[in-house]
Amino acid sequence: MHWLFSAALVAAFVILPNGAEAGHGCGRASWYALTSQTASGERMDPAQLTAAHKSMRLGTKIEVTNPENGHSVVVRVNDRGPFIRGRVLDLSKAAAKEIGMISAGHARVCFEEVEDGGWHPLMRPPVSMRPVW
Image (cartoon, rainbow, N blue to C red; front, side, top):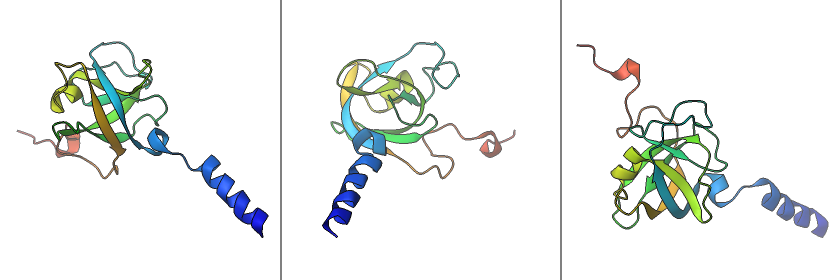
């Protein structure tokens, strides 16, 4: 019976992701405003609320918070990176502006995956929700 408990414990560490792989974590973030092609195939648009993460599934929506000022923004992961040791996210310029880290260039942030329950007030609404004038 002891071996069964040990096997289950090992399986939990192997199968269950932790930290950033689980869709949450804290660390340093920077921002970028290039217009190159992203890992998702779309062109990077500094005006959109997007982010780069090393391994999170492309299309994942995460809430990023700057604990220094309490400002948060919801972004969509559409690229890979950052490629600088110790950084957990690269944010678009628009996302960095929302959380107040433009002038510093980088900041400590915490992030968490959010449910994809549709439109979020900080994101551009889908076409179906835009007014037709």
